[in-house]
Amino acid sequence: MTERVRWGILATGGIAASFTADLLDLPDAEVVAVASRKEASAKVFAERFGIERAYGDWASLAADEDVDVVYVATPHAAHREAAGLCLEAGRAVLCEKAFALNAREAAELVTLARSRGVFLMEAMWMYCHPLVRRLKALVDDGAIGEVRTVQADFGLAGPFPPAHRLRDPAQGGGALLDLGVYPVSFAQLLLGEPSAVTASAQLSDEGVDLQTGMLLSWDSGARALLHCAINAGTGVTASVTGSAGRIDVPGGFFYPERFVLHRDGRDPEEFVAAPEDGPRDSMRHEAIEVMRRVRTGDTESPLVPLEGSLAVMRTLDAVRERVGVRYPGE
Image (cartoon, rainbow, N blue to C red):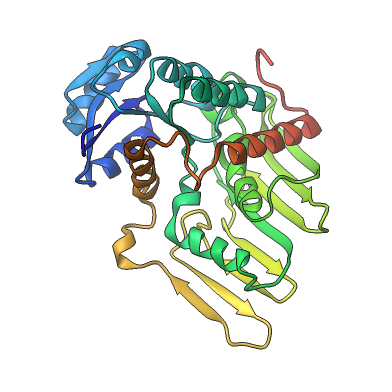
């Protein structure tokens, strides 16, 4: 492995463009190839970012020996196929969230990566964000006592037309997998996998969830009240309450610029992102984590462990079962 980590980008949508721009700001990252199912799209993307090779199929990118790690940025319904191709070819993979369409597909990817001894990580950038890591450390250290409740929401006002991917069952549409994965992942970062799941949703004519409310429960007595929507713009806030205090995260909880710790009997303490952390919406921290692990030969990251990603997918499956959302082929 050379000092510079060579990236391939699989897909050419908005999230792929944002991640590629962040990679280009890292001196030890090099983007050497991009692939799309349409060669014209790959070429336009390559020209935009100065990428040497553009492929009109995913298999060619997976086979490219000059690529150390592939960033999979397709819609969730294609994650199993796209990431699987790369893992089969021995490429390390960073795969967008939700990790797959369902827990079965996610487990297949994890099994494949482990059988090949290849690095795999879900692109849950929230887990790599310095302030989120600080928040977790405070909770783990008992700053607010025993966690009793978690509240988190993520909603977009839209409106999204019926033809939009967020309303397309064939692409894993709906609020839950695209947005709800954040509140669920936030709650499980702090409490682990829940023992019980209750949910209710408003469904679209296409059969995907326009908004979903979730109540997750743990044997400890802890509860998480979570919400996601593609028809209502919410505050995108989070709060964690314990037996001895509370942490409030204002708008944009999954990439915060600050949060406030309230300890019983003490003045509030504000924690603010450091200037060296870069822009709050940068995905550079997950890229840095991937490159760190790939260089050292690790096959997964302790910041975004595969078992945690599988647990989140099981919860998302349970929510969909409760609200009656099924995707083609399931």
